[in-house]
Image (tube, rainbow, N blue to C red; front, side):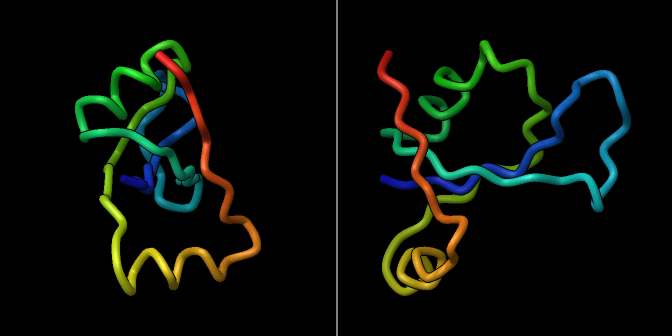
Length: 71
């Protein structure tokens, strides 16, 4: 399944909406997403599963690239 992860680049600062970034990752579950990203030291705000029409919509975005991390 593909997940959209909303995050801040640093864990030391208070989250600011304007600095929120996103990435797409393939994983089995939300827990798996967190496990795969644990060594990146980012502040994960929200993990959203993507499927169906929502996934198709996100795939139209030119910035849509699925991060593949094997663990």
